[in-house]
Image (tube, rainbow, N blue to C red; front, top):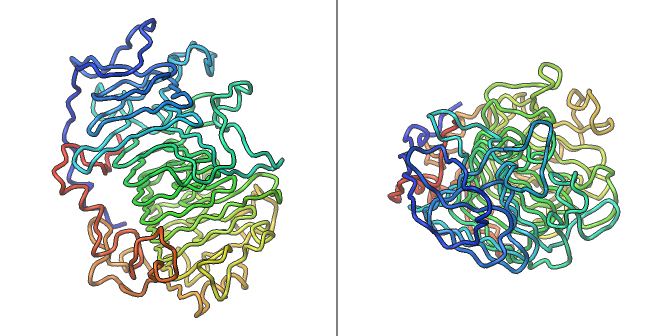
Length: 500
């Protein structure tokens, strides 16, 4: 696989500054040891009950909750160090002494996080394993979680639910989300990098993601965010209608972009770049689902994704050959999902499949539209370029067995869906290999990129959220936002490719 040029640029060391900042501190808790030579950091710990501004580098000590009605503001250039768990042997999660758990920032329903960095002063959430070079790893700490009051899908028709990573604590109301407000506002996250998160906080197989958005509404602003080396998903959306632009998932263990529980928002200019990491549940670059029962209670998951660049691993891992860590395919549309993917590059590389559909995908009328409509809900694969590890569109699989069957990804292709993908109405094309895309060193389109100006300008059909472009892929030739991350004078660029 072609390497991203900026991976070779490296990162400058960020000095940790020992200056107090204004925040609500629990002085009854002894300040923990910070493994950075000579550093004394401020600490976020327990529950934040007053409006708080973090002005200098800070330690995230265990699970921290921002209470309803409270705003946590993080200033540009601040680094937040997520702690390791200090629970006693045999104790999985301590819901009382929150500081004993892995560092996790939870923004409760009706609270806000304003983490507004800049290109040359990004905000970085990272591991506290900084005592020696190469000591950081995926899952070192929890992650960042936003709980909103937006609409969600539940099998029982409920309008609220508890985040699955914390569901072993059934009476803890701090981890509930969901409601009826499509315009709910959980704050602003901009020019932020979240790295080495995705750790187990409460119990095995209940990892927190890099950035988790639960019932988050359209009033929330999310752009220019990287999740690097997450131990679970990079970005996961549980319902809600939040929109986002300029997202990058790099070297994720599980899914890069995961949509569940009726998420119905818009994304544009997003990148997934895989290494050989994979999860024991099977990893994809996009996974979309509703609930395990394939229930008919709306709303249904229906993300609209434009201008994605999805780059798969160069080495495949299959369920048969490596059941503890394997890839499913580039995109997996599951139960009652309607995914609209437009103007995108789907580069499967070593993955066996470009798109996987389950049988319950179509039960909600989600089988691919032909001809497509960009303004009417439904499943659309339009004006994309695919590279699949098989000739033509043979990398499309339609599952005809129950979810979870060992034979799940060893089935013949569905001729109907393949015919719709290659239909002249859908304007999809295919290229043989990654190098045939002729992308630049920061994944931008170049003068040599095939079909360069054949994309669809979504603003011409009244889709006002999207930025108008007639190019495909996440980095148009006239909007090289990935290169800009390294040319704006940043001490620590907001994009990183360092995996330890």
